Image (cartoon, rainbow, N blue to C red; front, side):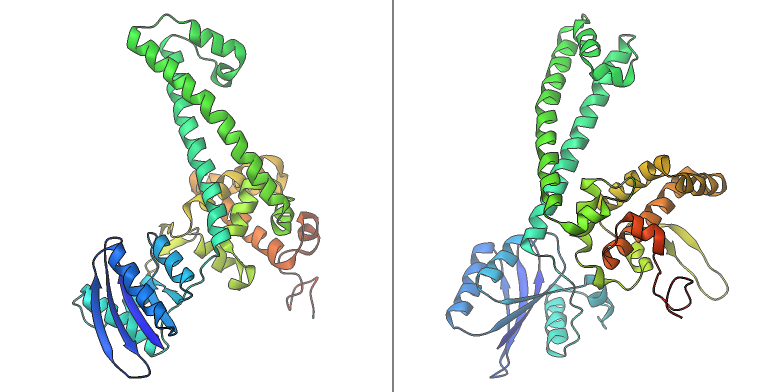
Length: 350
C-alpha cells in the first residue's frame, strides 16, 4: 500500500509518500495539474492500493474527481486540528506534507465528513439561486433609486404594471435612459431564471422526506429545509443542539481565562448560506408564532434587534435538528418537546 501526504495548492502540490511494503520514503513537487494527473495515473497502473491525505480545501474538486475515478482512498483532514499537531514554529510546504504523512501513518489523521457528489451538486443549485436573487435585488434597488430621483416613491408597487409603466415614461438623459433600459432587461431575464430554480428546489424537496418534515415548522420554506438537510448531512453526526449551533457559527466567540469570561460576536465559522437562510426564516417564524414573537421582543429590548435575530435563528436551527433526528413534524415537536425521552424530563423516561 502507498500512503501519500499532500500539501495541496490550486497551482501545485508538495507530496511525501511511502510504500508500506518496502518502507521506501520519497518526496516530490507536482508543479501543474497535468503533471499531477500523470503521476497518479501511473500509480493506478501499478494496481496498488493508494491512500491520499490532504487538508480541507475549497479548490480541489478536480483532484477529488481524479482520485475517485482511479479508486484511490482520499482522506480529508481538519486543517485547524492538523495545525495544532505541528511542533516546529517553522512552516513550509515540505514540512506540511511530511506532517500529513506522519499523521496518516500513526493513525492520528483528523478525518472529516465529506458529502457525496450528489449532495455537492444540489448545493450548487442552492448557491446559484441565492446569487441570482442577490443580483436581482441589486438591480431592483438601482431602479428604485432611479424612480426616487424622479420623485416617484411607491416601494413594491413599482414592480406592478402601473408602476413599471410610470418608471418607463420618465424622460431621462441619454445614458440614464440607457441604464434604465439595461436594468429592466436584466430584471426581465433574471425573474424567470429564479422561478425555474425555485421550481427545481421544490422538486428536490418532494424527493426528500426529511426536508418535507422540516417544512412543517412555521417560517421554514423549501429552500431553508433543503439547505439544512444538505449541509448538515446526517443528524447522527451531532450529539446535541449546541453542537449544531457551533457548527453553523451561531455561537459567540469566547476568550476566557481564570475568573474573566469574555464573549464576543458569533463565530460565523459555519456555512454562510444556511446561516443567512436561518436568520430569514426565524424572522418569518416570529411574525407567525405568538410565543416566538414574545421571545424575540423580550430579547430585542434587552440586547438589541440584531442579537435577537441571531438568537432566534439559533433556536430555529436547534428545533430543526431535533425534528430531523427524532423523525417528527412540527405538531409532534410541540407535543413532546425536543428533549422527550431523556431522563428527568417530565414526558420522558424516569
